[in-house]
Image (cartoon, rainbow, N blue to C red; front, side, top):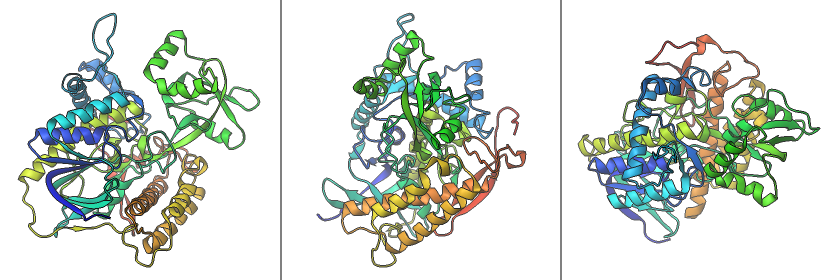
Length: 530
């Protein structure tokens, strides 16, 4: 290994997807020097880069905006906040217009009106344009440079991060005036397309700094996929009919509502789907909008509109869930000074409540929260008083085992996946299954704290991933057990009804001594039914 690399900057952005890119752009435009470190290659890694996605882009017209906000209110358990919805709709509208002009994104044109259609993006082209934009602005990008721990000063304020540069085989240490965590959610290495970098690293690092989380019970997103596939385009299954192994139609099975019917049936038999409800016009639109969705069928000689194909459910965790680090002000600051959060690393309850925003809402949240976090981090870095003392790393599990290493990262990941991926545990939730799963995750955490580490840079990266997945899982299941009702995506078979007394958010945090605590729900818009 070569000598460690040390540098400093105003704002350090950790991540390389849309949220990180927008954060870096806005921090730079606010006058800050910016370094971006990505676990992969900025512009090609993460859940957005290989996909097409809709965007919550709604013209600033009162009726259209009201309908857009109302569409997810009940699904989300009435936990969304109209103030934040309005902010996101405004910021997304502005950012998409900037993407067309300054980002030079080639939006398709409506042949009837000649106007650009800005309600979606193709991930590869979107992220290619974002990287080019970052380069033009002078953001310093370091690819293949996963962050392993945060640096804090003697007051506990976050002042940078340390990590490992894979291609150079060297450690790095970057001190900064503020840090934006845009590391994505956690999909437990389930193999969902683009989520191999989404292992909860930011959640682990923030938890070590003492940050608070919100909505971690809303973390059991499962996508419908063709059996053996990794491509998660659940929206298209809104045009599907679902069948049992004997050919019968599965009544009440569906994509938005009725996925639990599919899950329960899968425990007993194979399930098949056919996109037979899409007419020829819709079929053509689908192929243009999400071409990679159809590659898997074309290669197998399957026409998904006329043929039935076997399906499965693939865990997406907090990537399409809504839980994450809590935001405490309009700049997406966390509860820790100097630490800001954006994208899927943050809670998305403010706009989605307890139900997945899917690609559209999550894409809007990524660019909006990234913009605010970048601006806020730049202001903090350039104006806030800070300690002049030394900074130190606070990473523990996976980096600094309490005893001699006795566990491998692969062993920890496999054990955590056994508790977090099976949908009979995480999706079809029941206290009798959640409690023993949580107990095993707690035991795994204790074992990892004692004996999980790595001798090389790559081993340390994998060890931290394993620790992060375990940490996220423990917060998820504690929060799920604390919500003794069914609200949003957090459905409890042993508590199947909505409970008006639980119309609140659940805050959580901690690693060695995790905690969960209810928080008053704020909704500044219409009166909310619970």
